Length: 380
Image (cartoon, rainbow, N blue to C red; front, top):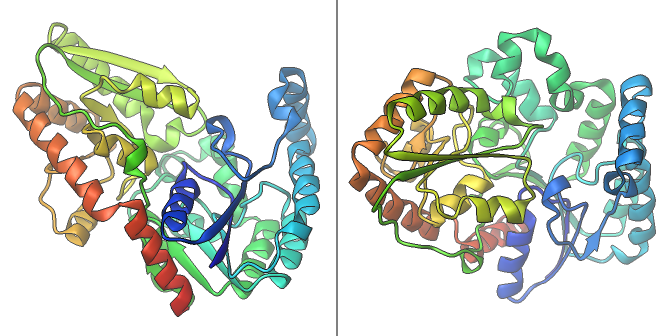
């Protein structure tokens, strides 16, 4: 099959591509590299504004004063030039409704031509979109990345990226894509919960992880227990970074001779991965039911990850609590208690480390995941 993947988040489409290629398929990936992370693409959409501090500063002023982001125009022009090459694919998959980072009007115009010149079209929900944001805005549906906003509406400015998906313009884009796609796939439980009653929903396919690119080192704790917290400033409030920071401050005071704590901010993906290689415990996020990509890669490498591991997730994979990952909650005392349990029982860290790698091998292997995508695409 000839497959076209549009957009990239957290290396998901790169890993899927590698799985599909390993199975003998021809795959093309078009994306902007996911911001700071700069993941590889066959056709990389480049913003000169991102690469120039002066232009970036002026563009930020334009966004604040006029709601005009010139990066969108750059991406639109580049994608338009690519369109003549992006034809006659058996499958096209968008990683998100906002897959190429253009305005909604530009996206509708560009996607209209893209859809006409290809066969089946699919939408992957592995991040925020119209459906998930509306679902998360209802507190009856449980906690989510929008919980801080629901608790304090004064934070609306920090959630403008999320809330844009429920504006009239994005609703039009959502309606256009929903009408034209053959099916929708979710990457984990957080999005599955929002889409499970959608008539075009094809089901949950666990994130593909290309473990051949990752080094796994057996965990042996000889001296201090190393705890790592990598912060992305644009999403820190959504991931509950402040809860982790407060918990770490307590742990540092109580166990100064037992732990080594490393915190980083806004590292590029490659540097981020290198920086946590020596860690035993990684603090990921508190407002999720399932794991994101960074957590999954860390789990394969044998890290004990504080992340989404809710009861629904345990039930889905038939797991016991605290055997594969630690379910992180927005509760400082709870986080301190869980960290203390590991610090005082280092053998538990070694056990969870082994279990975590086995879990990724079993449920997130990139080739197995690619096979599931092929089945979903073919059967739609």
